[in-house]
Amino acid sequence: MSMHFIWQLGRVTEVTQSITFVDNALISLQKDMTDELLSETRYEKKYLIVRDRALYRGFLKSRTEFEHNLSKALMLSLSPEVHDALNRAADFHVTYNSIFKEEAEYHKAGVRYDRTWYTLEKERAVNAAIEELVKVRTMSQQSILEKVEKLSKAGRQARATAMVVSAVSLLFGIALAVLITRSITHPLSAMQQKTKDIADGVFEADLKVPSSPEIGALAQAFNTMCSKLKEVDRMKSDFFALMSHELRTPLTSIKEGTNLFLEGRCGEVTEKQKKLLQIISEESNRLIGLVNSVLDLAKLESGLLAFNFSKADLSPLIERVVEEVGPLAEAKHIKIIREVRDLPSLTMDSERMLQVLRNLIGNALKFTPRGGTVSITARREKAVVIVAVIDTGPGIPKEHATAIFDKFRQVPGVGRHSGSGLGLAIVKHIIQAHGGSVWVESEAGSGSTFTLQLPA
Image (cartoon, rainbow, N blue to C red; front, side):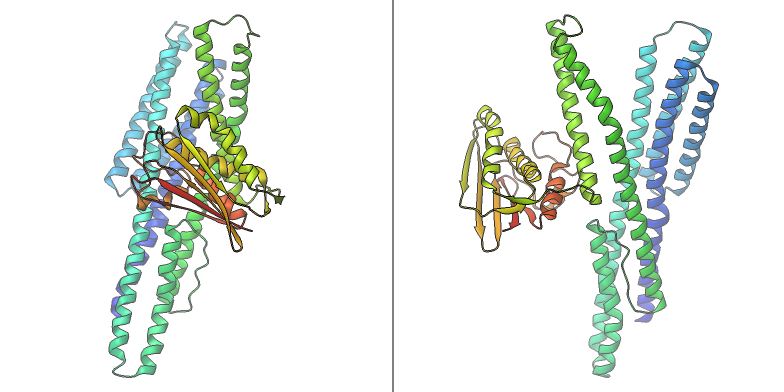
């Protein structure tokens, strides 16, 4: 039994170290390479404008850092797919540098050239390189999930072995068998539960098991892995929040500038120009909405979003949202059915609850085909209020019923509707902040029922 557990612990420790020192390192290097690549683009654009050698040196420094990090990532990558993606990113990086070098020579010689072509080609090369780096991050995260599943499997196997040994030990002494079994199964059960928590995205380094040094070392490795994963998740959230904050100001300027053109304050605008400006305005609004969603989610995850709780009725909020989506329902010939019984006043943030209702009812209308039906029911059951939004859309496969509440997650193959994958994650955080819960009941091809439960 001891040899078996030592072997299992060796396997688990090996996998844990692989996650900590390979996959996490690749994710960190991918972030650094992306930052250096974006830094290169900033330096070269400024250099072409002001011809400052200091900017060119900054470009060379960023390029050197990118190549250094790329070499480290290639040395760490064990997967052929990751290795290929890194090589493709390197190729695109070389292409980008070649284009810039050629453009810089033209620029230095004062020769006229097609600047638009060079700008587009550089953007294509940079975007392609970033896409390959994103693939590296995705594959590394998938590798982490697969290895965590291996850890869970190893824990189950070890526990099963311990149970078998315990049954045999009963023949030699019940008391000794119970003592040995408990000393083995308790830490393994804790580790098994911890692997499930990690798979669910809970990265708290709080695993404490009184056990032998070997299992204690494994528990410490678990805690180290959790700390690294939590740091990576925090860096990712900070990156999205920072980028969203930086994007908000220029997007607002673009939107306001477009509105000035549409209003004719900058001169006469042709019909064709109006159409293009309207498209720009709509896309700006969509991007601003996405940026606001990312910022809201980042604040919700960090606990920095302030809630204004007060006693309010839920029924007027439902009616308000139904009126707002009325034109969309009429355009798609969708019938909205409301069944709102007498509801008690709730302690809630009315604006945030409106955000929840707009998201759920808006999603129901978006995924319901023409001529379908969307039903909204609200009732009180004992000490809770239950609100359900039922649609007649394509439904959600059972394996995705929980994942859709994660950020940036969408159900593959369900309709052709685009989105950020943030709405339901924001809904989940807001409802949890109100002390409630939200879930979905659905099957592919039979519609969906999104239900939220709030304390009365």
